[in-house]
Amino acid sequence: MRRGFKSEAERLATQVRDEMGLGRYKPLNIDALVQHVGAQLRAADELTSLTKLNELEALQPGAFSACTFDFGTRKVIVISPLASNERQRSDASHEASHLLLNHSVKEVEQLGGLSFFTCDPDEEQEANWLAGCLLLPRELLLRSLKRGLDAAAIAEANAVSLQMANFRLRATGVERQAAMWQR
Ligand SMILES: [Zn+2]
Image (cartoon, rainbow, N blue to C red; front, side, top):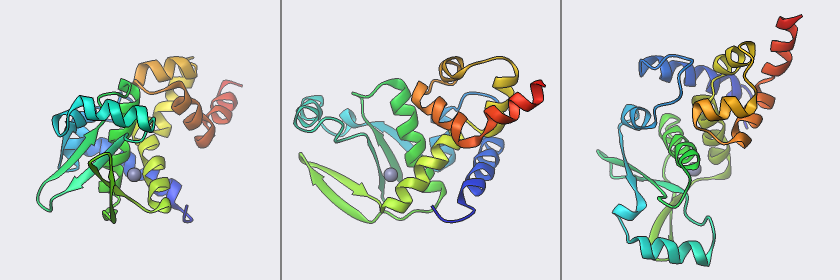
């Protein structure tokens, strides 16, 4: 990731949450985020049949997680109805992050009769990182730790996976900061 991106993403996530009127400590409201980036949220089975999605999943597990269709004036974020709630939230945040970062849709890939837009690896990394900041801002993590919440409790309170909570706790270095605060 380019230099300075990580702190930029943290600032952008805070700004977006403020603009949404969500603030820094509440669980991310996915519908509001998608609306905020000017998109609509759709489950993939609204666009293709659930049978097709199940076939694709059997063929290549996890092949479809989410994608964004950009029709110029209309943007649609499509998530998988087969994914867990936590996964859907994280996928939708990832897609919204592409839009927030003005990433352009670059390629169309066909898989099992579905069209996918793929991004370049740098943009994927950036979107993943920003999605993490949006779901679990640094300040939210720090306050949660100070209140005695552990990774599992943070994951539960914010409807994210334990893996995501652990990743963000490590990546932000808040554990160290909270330990210092407790001394
Ligand atoms: Zn992506």
